[in-house]
Length: 73
Image (tube, rainbow, N blue to C red; front, side, top):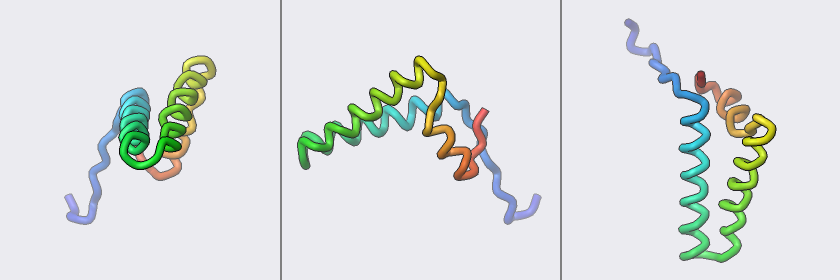
């Protein structure tokens, strides 16, 4: 195997969505507590997006990740 060959890990789509959403909710909540209350908009937006995903099955996060070249199942 060549040294320049990159090994890409395939990750499940649902796992990716949960990790990204929970990270953004946590980061937004911490920033709302310690920096500015307006950061509460980030967890609200993520929560609304997850609710929308549960009804429609469309998730912009997976489109972004696929555009960046990461492999998802």
